[in-house]
Image (tube, rainbow, N blue to C red; front, top):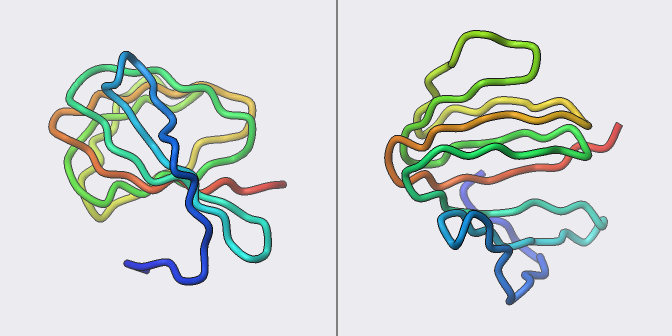
Length: 105
């Protein structure tokens, strides 16, 4: 899916890591939501409350998921899941454009 229809978009950005990562929340009619964001090149660690689907729409990065010891390369067009109540590391090698979906369980 390249576009979202009939959504509400929060005007204010979520800003992390001194502005190196930003996102905006979009809410769908059914109450579900996603965030659309940008990461500047750098190393980051994020925590999750819910299970997340991270879709990398452009750019290239490496991820280290919970319980894993090997970094994985993810490029634009690929995605990965992160378990609820966990942390993951990401190294943005280039500017990374992403869509994060929150999956209640």
